[in-house]
Amino acid sequence: MSEDVRYATTLFLKVFATCSPPLTAVLFMGMTAAYTPQERWKTGCKGLGIASIILALALVFGNSLLEIIGVSMQAFQVAAGLLLGKLGWDMVHADCFEGNHVSSSSSREDISVTPLGFPTIVGPGAISSIIIGKADAVNTLQHAYAYVVGSLIMLSFFGCFYVACFCSKWLRPAFIVIFTKLTGLVVLTIAAQFILTGTLNFFTKT
Image (cartoon, rainbow, N blue to C red; front, side, top):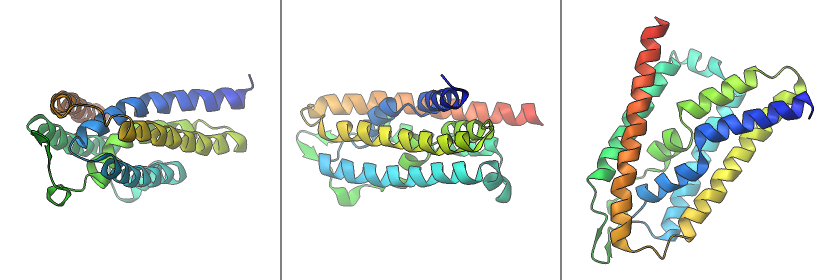
């Protein structure tokens, strides 16, 4: 295996592990438990579009983007944790179904930008991984591979989200309510990790 291919493979595995598209699709199912498959797919596509733009900006501009707006990666992590924390809290305390009634779409908040696009699909972990990975590129081909990796990551998200949208319609409402609350606990745990990591890294850096 050449150094260039090894670089691309390693970068893909690192970013994939950080983003974890299958786990994110499971979280997405919990977030949109009251949605129809079509509504879920529409929301997912919008969130994936936003996430793709964020990842592209991270690839093109890297750390300079955060430096321009005067934001540290540590502050980025804390902000992401707060956003996820609110989502997780709402999921734990949500009653998505009452019998066979599904809450109307007009009463729902649009979650596609935040917290879905950022920080659920693409968060500080994914952004930092892709920035650091691209910084390790030593030639033009490896720089190109970094963009290919970013594209493959987003394609894997689209595949996982499609399965989450159209292959879970047989689930019973009661199961989805329980699943939503359990997923909320996971989201709260991830949020706490983001906040703790960002805070500790800030004090360690200073």
